Image 1: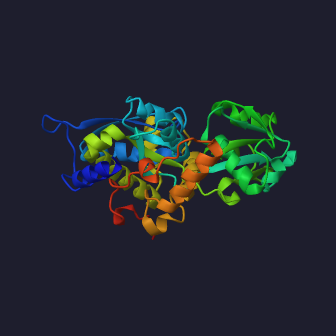
Image 2 (image 1 turned 180 degrees about the horizontal axis):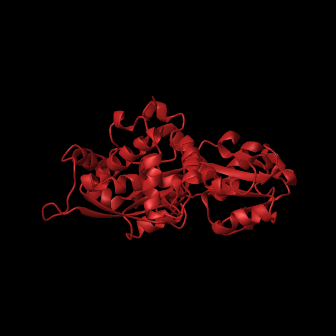
Image 3 (image 1 turned 60 degrees about the vertical axis):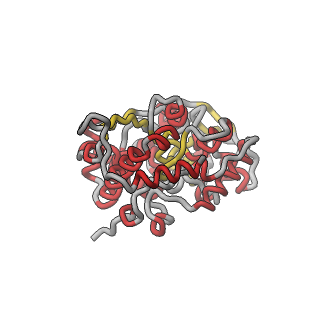
Length: 342
């Protein structure tokens, strides 16, 4: 089945460069869900929208806020959204729990490395060593990818997965419980912690990166429903071309993307969101992208991630990497290279 998707997508991607719905020049509607709220992490999507890149590709894209990188997968699988931004490890689990022809596939790797971190207060004894978390109280949302990936870090560090106490905290309250000292540490996407850094001095905090613990994970990717991939892969390819164009432009100069994002959310602080994108860019443009370009993956790395997720999550079925990721609709490698700044 995956081979059929690949052949259909490849043939269509090489066809017309733009996609329009039946009836002449009417653009094709497409609903896209973010993983979370609007901020600098996803500013390139708003640049593509405001500059008409989606429209130029024959698409009428609606971008909605999300309820977490796990929830995006179920939104797409339900058919309410055709595409979105969601966590690769959670997609592995979802496909394992729904065996057979995949309902959702990744089509463009946004975070080339997952920006998972635990940030701790130094005055509570949290250092750069993950072992310093032992016996501490760590805030996290009930269902979030950083929390769920913790057992992978624990294994790498030779720690018990229950080495500390989780305190379930809503995303919106996480900064508050850290500032008040209700907890000793909290899970974050690294770029999401910019709001915390605005309230606590960086020198008061220890940032423990999962990647530094040897946990080599792909993070949130652009996902598409398998129905859309099978029935109209040109729509997926068109969306990726427009989005990739905006991402590369954001690497060259993030200011227009932040301005486009603030058209949607004027209350956001420009300086803070530029700082946020600066962190995001480290993970979107991680070292691998210098070889294969933005959006692509190393198949072996994904296979290792599937193995680890299946083991840690206790999955009875292990999806193939081809069922998880479909690279056939990516723009060309040359289009996906991060531009060199002058």
